[in-house]
Length: 370
Image (cartoon, rainbow, N blue to C red):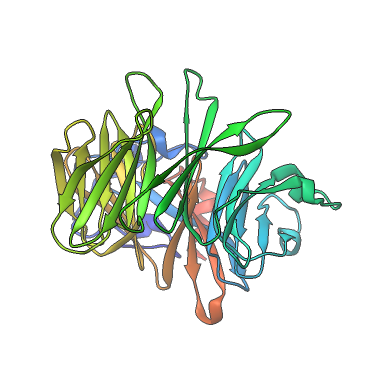
């Protein structure tokens, strides 16, 4: 395994054996290459490296979202913006809202961030530009009604140009589906409410690949067993998509495209065909996984365990690479690259960027050895 804090070029992944220089060089990429542009091989290979971007922050980061080169993140004491391009590192992190924030989703196209925040854990939407302004007003934020004690939010979009945005808020045994109303409203408005037998654990808004329209809400919950429910938005009807033995709730759910949904459990993952509910493939993780990220169009997923990041090829189901770390890890967010938190002692947090291995100059290689 590769240690996140060290030089990835000096450490080979487990089981890689001897590797020729030509193979290693073939896995080097130009700086700024997005993860979606990478093709994972079928064998073990050093595809990615981790670079520290925030050495230490005094609080535990609960959630985060990327906004261009900035990172918005939430803590128990406030909502912060981290700008790694700030000349003075001491000024790179600024608190922009004094509110408890447990989950957030940044929507750059709408210039808003959707949060589960406040003492009542409601859905609150903030205007991004207003957060940067020194004169903040209440008009720059909107509270979604009936969302107290919200435990999950997920965002989807549809239309030929993907310009229609939807938000689903999971509150106890209910799901509130909302649509973004443009100017002059500029806020999410309730469309319809659905009920679930028990509290849902994970979910997503599913877009039909043939019509390019939002068609289903897919959620998973645990009763006597783990059940997957598909709610048809047009007819308001729900149908059981699949059931899994045991009472282990999925830790994450990912849309792989082409009618494939990957349900990720702590120990394993199962890919379902949304049209039939059939299991297309399944595999076991090398270590218990908490979150999963899939770069759209890629042939791999990243699984985040307590102290490692697994790179798994979803075509061959083989483990390609494992990045290890001494401290507890937490997936934060992704745009072209992935950001993870390193949870240190006394609730302090560091932040790393996971990126394709880049071609380094001789000077950069010397710096890495120090």
